[in-house]
Length: 253
Image (cartoon, rainbow, N blue to C red; front, side, top):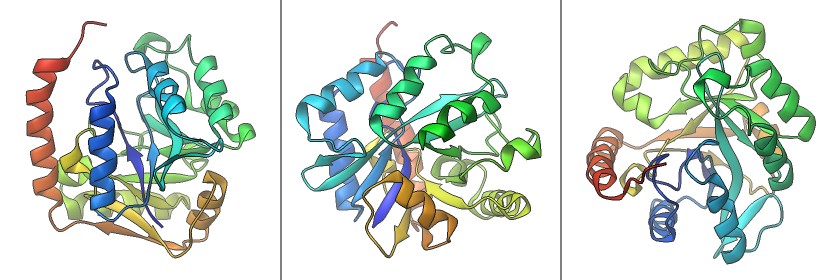
């Protein structure tokens, strides 16, 4: 299985969910050789309910992933926490949407949920919790109490950060943090636009039907992270196209 654990299917938080854009992301993932992704749309994106509501009408879902014409789309979301970081939550769709409903009063910066409380909502429900882009200047995690950081199922080696911070520097920082805390590191493109898809991904020997199975494989180290040699070009191109498209399609929330 080749899978990206951090990918968006909307251009930005302020845009509507458009099936044409969704299809461009999935088709590019297939073209890049991936056969699965985790959908990690922002929990406070404009009309979050449209994402899963639309997919429910279009594709079969076994409560773990949507079958998009043979391509696995595992269910998840990206959550802002009070400490300032972004957290990737994934797992059974019914449990994921339970947590999303409980976050309805925590959608803006002045009332984001604390990380410890988010763990309390997610782990008993069997959801995997990944620390997103731990060294991003605007939303870093490394400053948080180490006992809380140790509870992550993994850290995110983020495609956007590999470009902006520098590949070798960001790898060194994230892998060192993971080794220090005993937390695995997985790769996530953080793609919002098709050109960024495939800039990083994870390769597993086996195939998996649930996030729980993926989490166990991550814990055992039975995977490798893959970084595209064209990562910098892919991210630059995606950023440029995203800026152009946002000017045309962003809506007033």
